[in-house]
Amino acid sequence: MVKNKKFILVKHFEGEIDKSCLKLEEENVPTLKANEVLTEALWMSVDPYMRPYSAHLPLNSVMIGSQVAKVVESKNERFKVGQLVLGYFGWQTHTVWNPSEMSSALGNPYVLPDFGDLPPSLGLGIVGMPGLTAYFGLLELCDPKPKEVVVVNSAAGAVGSCVGQIAKNKGCFVIGFAGSDKKVKWLKETLKFDAAFNYKTKDVSEALKEAAPGGVDVYFDNVGGEFSSSVLYQMKDFGRVAVCGSISSYNADHKHLPKATIIQPPLIFKQLKMEGFVVTRWKKRYEEGIGQLLKWVKEGKLVYEEHVTEGFEKLPDALLGLFQGENTGKAVVKV
Ligand SMILES: NC(=O)C1=CN([C@@H]2O[C@H](COP(=O)(O)OP(=O)(O)OC[C@H]3O[C@@H](n4cnc5c(N)ncnc54)[C@H](OP(=O)(O)O)[C@@H]3O)[C@@H](O)[C@H]2O)C=CC1
Ligand SMILES: CCCCCCCCC/C=C/C=O
Image 1 (spheres, rainbow, N blue to C red):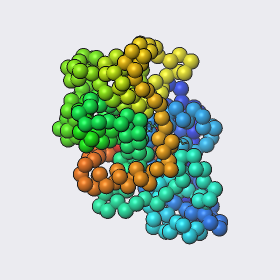
Image 2 (image 1 turned 30 degrees about the vertical axis):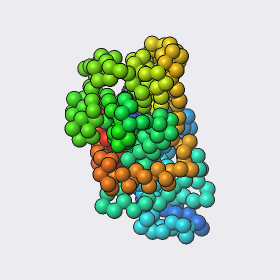
Image 3 (image 1 turned 135 degrees about the vertical axis):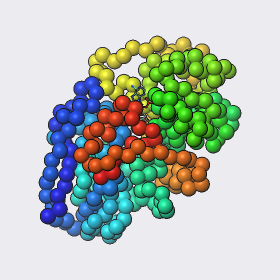
Image 4 (image 1 turned 120 degrees about the horizontal axis):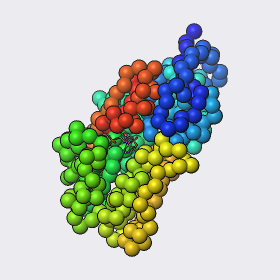
């Protein structure tokens, strides 16, 4: 009998990720019925959204998340044994699913395109949801033009590293912020960012005055809070701001959110355009985005890094690691 290992959310997180909120369980995998598919997880994703989104997950549900999985049995002609599939199947090793009954809110499970020699785990990162977030968020909301100054934070992470590289490829002057000197070195030396700073040791406003004395045209925000107030006060007239993430506040109690300097003055007097988004807005264009991102990776125009944690049981540690800045590039778990 095939066994499924799964992590159940037994308590909602309060404050930092607490591993005791997740309980490992095992169960028998049921026999397939007509039209069903059985997949086995190979790679699992850990993402910051899991912290805010899990607050709405009913207790005792399988923890939310995406995975690259292999079809091991199929009674559905659309999915063949051996194919690699990207799906939001949650934190479990084996999933029995009916393609016609899946929720399409996040985008339906799909067969990965041919990655050639590239690892299939990229389907969770630069050629997956984080890459799509960078691609659509930057290009659709910020319309970066050559020579414009683009600022991105959490810049050495999955989304940020892709944003900075797409902006560089568009001919922009790119400034990244990250939380360690090692990450800053990677941004400058490997990803060829024009400037990069460790926000833990360098004041953000001072850094921008040095690197962009004329101001910032585009701000791709992954962090929020006071960091963002500092950047907004350094924007040029008609600057564009994509509000992608607010990781600095995800562990905060929503009744007592941290205070930050008000942002209305620069929004008004610099006539800024600021827009929040969720990547699923473009789910009908995922195929286009994935095709473009994969092409750029194959051409060497997008460089990737992965932070790999070994073992399904280590998923909670890997999730916690995101909030401790452990990862350079995309954090994934090898099952
Ligand atoms: N709107 C959308 O559709 C989407 C939004 N996102 C958002 O994009 C952002 C980046 O996600 P992703 O690339 O997957 O994750 P990352 O790979 O960037 O990993 C998270 C990183 O966040 C940084 N970080 C953690 N805590 C803090 C903090 N308190 N203050 C500042 N930085 C912190 C750490 O880097 P460091 O060492 O630099 O501090 C850490 O490595 C997140 O805010 C996420 O919610 C992601 C996907 C879709
Ligand atoms: C129930 C699973 C939720 C999956 C959400 C996937 C879209 C990511 C949007 C991210 C927003 C902020 O990080």
